[in-house]
Length: 145
Image (cartoon, rainbow, N blue to C red; front, side, top):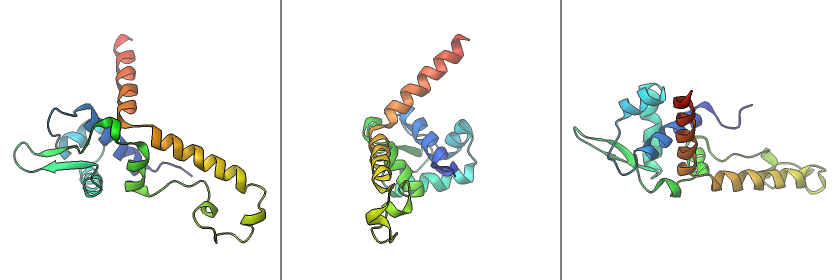
């Protein structure tokens, strides 16, 4: 089971692309699709979701396209994941107190809660600018080879 679904991976790549263009104008869905190797139709659907959630804004017209609604340092991994696939939980018992009758005396519940908190902390701490830094450093390594 994948924790991060394929569509979420695509949405993250699209958002990182926009982060790289932050302050430089709009990027069209077609350009995003080509650059990030995501089908045009899926790119359009993902961008609609991200726009509806307020993470990106769109501009119509000949120079239209998408741009981030705020600085890349203000958009975290968790926000993107939740828009595309909903919250990530380690186990369904953590979603609802009534999900499991054994929850009060479960031998693994406490450790699952710790793991859930760790994941939430990580997803909230990693922002688009951090992803962008990794992308730039990976590109520089490839150029040196």
